[in-house]
Image (cartoon, rainbow, N blue to C red; front, side):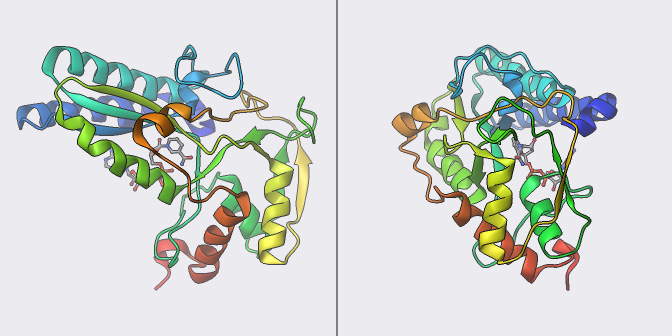
Length: 252
Ligand SMILES: NC(=O)c1ccc[n+]([C@@H]2O[C@H](COP(=O)([O-])OP(=O)(O)OC[C@H]3O[C@@H](n4cnc5c(N)ncnc54)[C@H](O)[C@@H]3O)[C@@H](O)[C@H]2O)c1
C-alpha cells in the first residue's frame, strides 16, 4: 500500500490496465469465469468493526483504489457479458506451505511476520513498529492474519458456483480475530525461542488502527472454516519456511 502511494501510475498500469487486458483476452477466448484477489484495503477506514461486505468502499490509497476499480470492471462484465466472478477481499495473507516449499519472498519485504522472523534470526536490523499510541489495547495496530492455505481453500470452494453465468460473489477472507503488532512479536518469540529486536517509530500515514473481518458470509454460503485459527499456528509455518529458505526462492 505504501509503495502504491509512491508509484501510483505504475500500480494503476499493473493492476488496472493489465487486468483489463487480461479480461479482454478472456472474453475474446470465451473464458468467462474468474476468481479475483481483492483486498480489505478497498474499504479504506471502515465505519465499524468487524468488517462486513456491505460496508461502503472508500479506499485511501492507490492500491485499494485499483482493486476497487477491478471489482467494478468485473461487475460490468457480469452484467453485460455474463461473466461470473468471485472477488475475495483478503485480509493479511500470511504463513507458508507445511513442507516449506512455498512461502513469502518479497523485494522489498514489507509484511510484518516475515520482517519479525528475519529480525529474530538476525538477518535484518531491528523491526520498526510504526506507532504505539493507537487507540487499541496495547497501542499498536490490530490486523487479521489469515493463512494462505485457508485462502486457497476458499478459492476451491467457490469454483463450482461460477458455472452459472452472471454470478457475482464478494467475500471477506479473514479469521475474524485481530492481533496487534506486539502480539505478532510475542508469537514469533514463542515459536522461534528467540527475541525479536524491535524499536518504536512514528505512525505511518493512512494506517487505520484496526482492520479485521466478519467472515460470516463466506462461512454460511461456502462452508469455509479456517484450519489455522491461532496466530502461532500461522507463524510456525512461516518460521519453517524462513529457516529452510534463507534466501527465499533463490535458495538452491
Ligand atoms: N498478501 C496480502 O496480504 C494480500 C492481501 C490482500 C490482497 N492481496 C492480493 O493477493 C494477490 C497476491 O498477493 P501476494 O501477497 O501473494 O503478492 P506477491 O507479490 O507475493 O505475488 C504477486 C505475483 O504476481 C505476479 N505479477 C505481478 N504483476 C504481474 C503481471 N502484470 N502479470 C503477471 N504476473 C504478475 C508477481 O510476479 C508475483 O508472482 C495480489 O493481487 C494482492 O494484491 C494480497
